[in-house]
Amino acid sequence: MLNETVNLGEKGIVFDIQRFSVHDGPGIRTIVFLKGCPLSCRWCSNPESQCREPQVMFISKNCIGCGKCKEVCPVNAVDFKLPYRIDQEKCIKCGKCVENCYANALEMSGIEKTVEEVIGELKKDNMYYRRSGGGITLSGGEALVQVDFVEELLKGCRANRWNTAVETAAFTSQQVLRRILPFLDLVLMDIKHMDSKKHREYIGQGNEIILENARIIAGSGTQLIIRVPVIPGFNDDEDNIVKLSEFVVSLKNVREIHLLPYHRLGENKYSYLGYKYKMPPIDPPSSKDMNRLKNIVEKFGLVCKIGGVS
Image 1 (cartoon, rainbow, N blue to C red):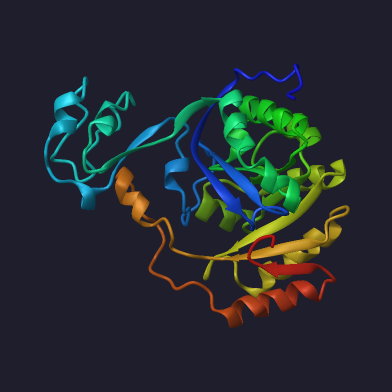
Image 2 (image 1 turned 180 degrees about the horizontal axis):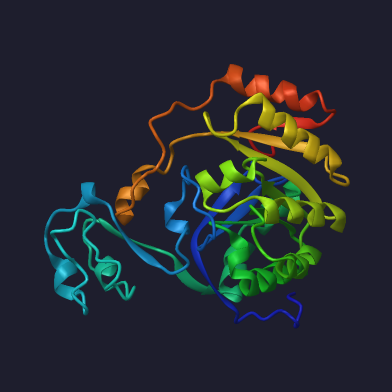
C-alpha cells in the first residue's frame, strides 16, 4: 500500500516506459524516461528528451500526404514546406494531428502523467521485480530536472518496496541531490570527461558541478557506479581514463566503472524533430579498444564492466 505522505497527484512529463531492462540496475527493471536535460551531448541518443515540454515528431517515411494533420491543427502549425512538417514554435502540443494521423507519421514525445498513473503502470511488473531483485530506474534526458515529480515517484516506489535507481549526469544543485538521495538504492552516474574545457566543448557545460556532486553522492552511503560513454576522439584516450580512474579511487566506497561504447542508435530521431545530428561519421569503438580501456581501469583495483549492469 502506498504511504499516505506520497503526493500521488504530482505531475511529470514522461516520454517512454521501457520494460524488462537488465542493464540499468540489478535484476529485471522498468525504466521511466523523463523529459528535460540541461546538457547538450553531441551524441545524445534521445534527442526528444532534451526539451522538457512535449513535442510532436514527424516520421517522414510513414507519411502518405493525406493532409489530415493540417486540416485538424487549430493553430496552423503544420507546414508541408518544412521537411519536419511541424512548426515547433507555433505548436501548442494539443495532439490532434497525432490522433488523426492514419499512417502513424506523427508521434507525441512526452505525455503528462501523475505519480499515481506511473505507479499503476509499474505495478504490472511487480512480480518480475520480486523474483529477480529488480525494480525501477529513472532516466531521461536528465531525470533530476523534474525533481518534484521524481521525489514523489521515488517515495511511491519505496512504499511498494521496489529497488530504486537513477541514471544521471548529476548536473544539478546539491539541494536537489539531498532531496532524492534518501529514496535511492543506486545511482548510475555519467562522467563524460575529466577535462572541463573539453567537457564544455562537447556537452555545453563544464564538469566542476558534476565532479563535486559525485563526491556528495559517494559520501551519502547510496551505492554509486560511475559510467563512461566511450566516444572515439573525445574521451577514449589513455590520459583521460587514467585521470577518471584516479578520481573514482578517491571517492568514498565507489569501486565500479562501466564503460558504455558509443553507438549511433537514435540518430534518425533528430530528423523527426528538425534537429541536426552533431556527431561526425565515426565508427563505434572496437572490442579491442574497449578492452584496452578496461585494462587501464582495472590496474587501479576497480571493477570494470563493458556495458551496463547485468
